[in-house]
Length: 256
Image (cartoon, rainbow, N blue to C red; front, side):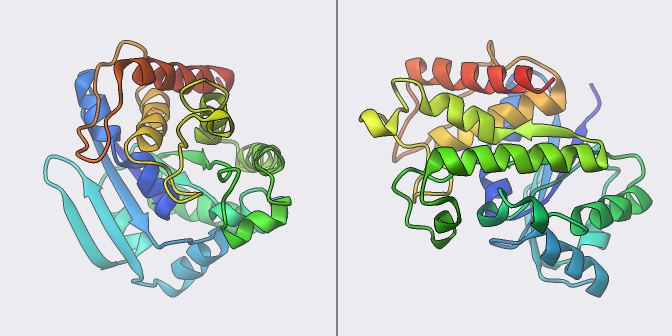
């Protein structure tokens, strides 16, 4: 099988999402190279401004046969590094439920990528709602309510994907599915899938997100995949893994 190459133009939420994608994929016999262009909290507007300025303000994380962390990277040069199969976009988490913050920046980014990585399929990474007790200042825009935030995110990303005609990576949906299960029903004593009220927990939250990306990118089912991340501070039990895989699978199935 040829190597699948994926580039995320993102922020810390894409960093959470791609951390385990290569390892999960390898367990199913798929070779996936993942790149993440990172600026913490970066919005679509800022990404576009960085394109216009050819700003070298990114850290480029490369998850491949050789891992790399390259400071002072730019979007254009990174698009030219590989023959990318996929390029993903996402809004900053705090603005993800605000449709008026997406345009014209998303469409401009999409056209820029079409011009400079014409062989790449574009995807939109649907981010997730904050934890119910999050103290992130952006939570106030959604009345500090997780359900309100997720509904707004779902609506905004749906409109965004339709506006440029691309598929979604439904991480936000998978997170909400998992939050309704016994192991991860945080409001009922289960584990939170966020480590600080908004970033994904390590390893459970990141594993769930990686499972969603794996299914979308490889078109393979996560259900029989046996990969589990090794983490000294916490481990994923077999029972938890079954739940997380199922939630990822159901979310992707919902958006096919």
